[in-house]
Length: 217
Image 1 (cartoon, rainbow, N blue to C red):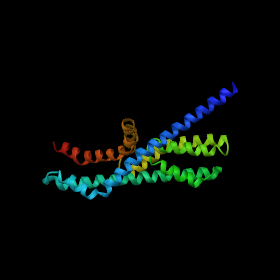
Image 2 (cartoon, helix red, strand yellow; image 1 turned 30 degrees about the vertical axis):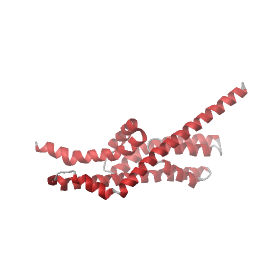
Image 3 (tube, rainbow, N blue to C red; image 1 turned 90 degrees about the horizontal axis):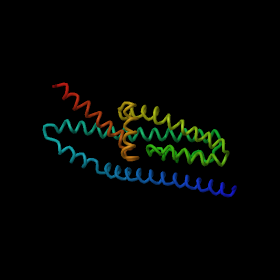
């Protein structure tokens, strides 16, 4: 019975590690695809903008250019905000690991900051990795680390992200939360990545086009 219990426990542990590995690879692959597409778009951004603006009627082209430039600026603000949030996650990881003696605090902080760029699952995967390293110190510290990352995930998703994105993208906090949840539910990681820029673009169009048109009627 003892051997069966140990064997079952090892199988469950291996299955859990395999599941985490698949989630990490899937998240990194989707993020890599988005990053590559983004880099290509940024490299060819002036030509893309010219083609996009040429599609607008001449009489409205100046207005379209202003709105388009503002949208691109808000996308840049989203990228900046995402980097700020990831740095905050890295600093929190470094402080926790340094205070409680978890090995390689700087390396773990860097890893968590990079993984935190992946929406929905990034910070969770980083927390699992830090907890596994903490397990080499003691089981209570590993459990405490899991609790710490659960609390930090709530803080990041519902307090930090809405505030940072509200400043950098000019999108209300509640819209940020809803857009991320809806985008992640519909399209997974890619949906969560584009949810806030799309919400910012829709908000801009509502403010600058739809609402003024409705008020003139």
